[in-house]
Image 1 (cartoon, one colour):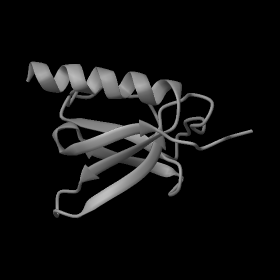
Image 2 (cartoon, rainbow, N blue to C red):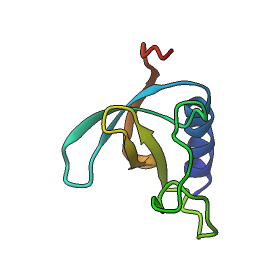
Image 3 (cartoon, helix red, strand yellow):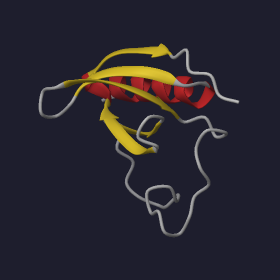
Image 4 (spheres, rainbow, N blue to C red):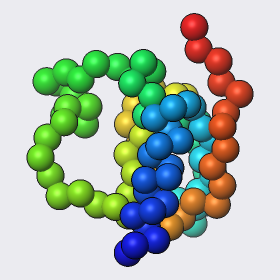
Amino acid sequence: MENLEVKNKEYKSMLERQVCEVTFTKVNGDERIMRCTLHKDLIPQATKTDPLSTKKVREINLEVLPVWDMKAEGWRSFRIDSVKDIVKSNFVYL
């Protein structure tokens, strides 16, 4: 569990500073590359109609990291233990 917590903090810290490309294995076994972020300037403001964007009290699951998918323009998540690679993206925003 300690390793997951360390990786969770590391990935979250990277994603809060920039857009990253995360390569991971989905639950169904497919590999996926997702361009995502947690950078506050790139995530839309929370609304009452979008429960995934609002902060609420819930059990913290260090095995899964919710992120903003830049391509899908929505919240997605990946399992920390399924990450194969995470690198800074060349994505540029204005």
